[in-house]
Structures are given as structure tokens and as C-alpha cells.
Image (cartoon, rainbow over all chains, first blue to last red):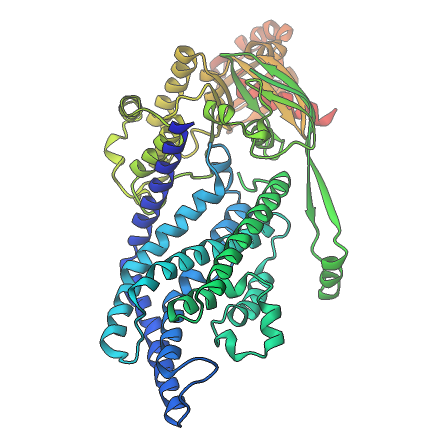
Length: 272
Length: 324
């Protein structure tokens, strides 16, 4: 049993390593993608500076500094945390490339997760690193929390990352049933930016709407980790948030396992 | 080693509408088209057998291999490989098989093949020494050792196929499903791969099922032939069996000095190659009479009696079967 665990770890690390090497083959693209997040960074900090210039000290519990920090972090983490469709999963299913993994003693969920981790590590070390330097140099009102808050923040981001992965993985398994899944991406693009708090912090929404949104896993993907960073969640609410993240992880894990089992029975291994 | 009884696989695919209105309608009330890929197929293969699985495109060969390797679930029927139900994907089963898909790459595209090999080493838990030895052996045999460190996307089709073969065999599988393993390879590599699989089969007592459109592959490698057409098995037996069914026929290759005389058409089935050369196919019993006749013809330049090839026999078998 023990040796089994060790071996699984090395498979996991090997896939991460391969994924990094493969992604790193397109280095220039990653440096360029830094420019994609640069403009929103400048724009939102200008926008909120203008909003707060007209007088108000606090807005729905956010100050000028914390709201700018909220958006900066949101822009930085958006690509990593956004639960969009996982196109490598749906393509594997649709084009039959999944067959090559089905004949091996590997777990597709963790295999594909490792690929995603590798991709994000490259992103973190290229465009995100550049963006962080930019933020430190030019966004003066960026807020730094007390040291004790970094660890809970990192934990919340990690759980959010896994949550987001499980959502996109489960949704992508739809490819077992239908070839047409772009409508799903459209649906995600309509719902997710609002419900995760990526467009505007959920505190700005009407109370009843927020309580409905908090019944879904989405607020725990972006809004919650950022609240942890900003200190908007501490003590009981903080623990409650972590608990909800864990519960959703468990629920989604069972959901994807069921979908996977049923989907495999329909898998056609197209082509060749 | 492999037991298949009454295997049937039906693929169901939803039909898109002919127009926009129908498309919306089908979205809510889907209509399905059923395709029977494999129909009530049964066979058994014992340990160490080398079987050629033959049939025209779309006959159900690859579908059978996909079911046997656990990639797809059968619609009905009982399938056992090494005592396991393939679709359950038991680790002991997966560790013991290889499925070489000529048209589907398992290699990581932008990085060297050695990275895929190392990943497979971790997946199958291959000890370092064994890994190095096998890599050495396979690399030398396929004359491909210097390709290990080249990004896969820079390899030619044949070079990539060699990498696929190596990646599939590193864990020393006991049951091999080979789907078009020589596709796109040059003659030397084809030869090397044939020899390799024959040797692998002999030394490791590995059970091998092979599909190939190159009849020469079957001639060299397979001892037994299973032929499938329209999802059903139409022949199952040794290679010699197919040949002997047609050994009562002979093909005469003829070359004339000036022109092909009209009486050749009466000897049997005439295939004209150009105005001086032709082939005549006839029952064995008519051969003597035909030769006698031809020897009296002053215009004759060359006569040779061709052997019935496996390719000819298989083609003949398939056409005869689809007519009846």
C-alpha cells in the first residue's frame, strides 16, 4: 500500500514536469499574456481612485485601498481560478485521445489535474510574476495584510483552485453525451463572473440575492479567498467558509465520479 | 488468455436535423441512429498465440480491439482477458496489456519522447534497471536511440511510430493489441518491427492480436487468421487453411512476342496487363491442358505459374463472402 502511494506521487510529479516543459515551449506567449492583464490592472485602479475621489470613505465595507486590492488580486488570479470548460478533457473524449489513458493504470482526474497544475505554475512564474512586480511598483494603494493572514489566504486559494478544477472537469464530462458543448461555456460565462464576485464584490449585491448565490459553490472560488486576504472574514465566518469549500469539494468529487462512471459506458473512442 | 463470447457492440449516435427547425426539435427530442459495429462475435485465443485480425475498413476490427483493451464497454456478450473483464480496468489487467494505436499518439507533442517514456516508467512502476535495459534493447532494434531527445513534433511519421512502439512496450505487456503497427514505416523499419514482434511473441510467450492492411505483415507474423466482415467473423483458422481453400486454383502469367491470342480467354479468367502480357486464373485440373495448348503457340515468350498469395486468398474470401 505504501509503495503504491509513493508511485502515485511520482506519476503526479512527472505529469506536472511534462506539462511545465510543454507549456514552456511557448515562452514568448506567456510573457505577452502579461500585457493582457496589464491594461485591466491600470484601468480598474484608475476607476476606483476616481470613484473614491468624490468623497466616500467606505463603500459596502470596502475602502479605496481594499477595493483596489480586491480587483488587483481578482485580475491576477482570474485565469487560475476561473472554472471555464476544460477543453483538453472534452477534446480527449470527443476525439478519442482518452483511449491512450484508459489503457493505463492512471486516474484521469488526477492526471489531468497535474497537467493543469503544470500549466498554472508556468503562468505563475511568467506573467503573474511580472504583474506582481508591476503592482508593487505602480499601484501605491495596494493593501498588505498582517503576516498571520497569508497562510489562510493561500489555503483558501488552493481550495478554490481545486473547487474550480472539479467544476470545470465535471462540466467537461458532458462531452460523453453531446458533441455540442459550447453552449455550456456561454452559460458559464454568463453566470460565473457575477456569482464568483469577479465583476463586483458580492457585498455590493442586494442581501437576498447574495444569500441565494452563497448556496452555490461559486462565491468560494474568488470572493471568499479575497475576503480572507482583506480580513473581511475572520473567526466563525472564516471557518464556515473553509467548511463550505470542503463540503463543495466533497460533493463535486462524488458528482464527477458518477458522471465519469456513466460517461465511460457511452465512450465511443472515436477515430482510428 | 482471451475469451470472447457473443460480443456485440452497437454505437448510438444522435442525428442532427436537416434544417434549423429540425435541429431545435432534435435537441429536445433526440433521434438516434444505431450502428452495429460488431455482431455476435465469439473466439478464444490461448497464451502465446499470434493472431492476425483481418477485414476491410469498417469491418469491426478496431472496435473489437477497443473492447478487448477495456477502452469501450460492450453492448452485450462476455469478454475476458487474462481472467479479467476489460471494461472494469483492474490494475492487474492494465499492467498486463498494451494497445498500440497506429493512429492515436500517446506521446507528448512538444517535448522529447524520453519524457513520455519516463512518465510511463512511473505509471507502470518499472524499476530503473529494467527501464534502461528495455530502452536500450528497443532503441537499438528500431535504430531509434538518437531520436529519444528530439521533440516529438519534429519527428517524421515513421520515427514517431517507433517512439509509440517503445512507449507501449516498456512495461513488458503479456497481451498485445496491435492496430496497424507498421503504418507509415519505411521497409527497413517494417522488417525490424515484424522481426521484433515475432521474437517478442516467442521469447515472452506474449499473446498478440494484430490488425494490418499490409498482407506481408500477416504472412510474416501471424500463425492464425481471424477474418471479420460487416461485424461478423467469416473465417477463423490457421493461415494455411485459407490458402488451401484456394490452392485448387492456379494463376498463369504469360508473355507473348506480338499479341495475346484470343484462346487465352477460354482457359480461365483473363486479366490483361498490356498488349503482350496477361494473367489467366484457372482451376488446377485445367492447368495441364492449358500448358499443352500454350506450348504449341509460336508466339509465346514466357510462362510462369504464380503461387496463390495470402493477399489474393483473403481478397477472394471477402468478395465471395459478401456476394453470398
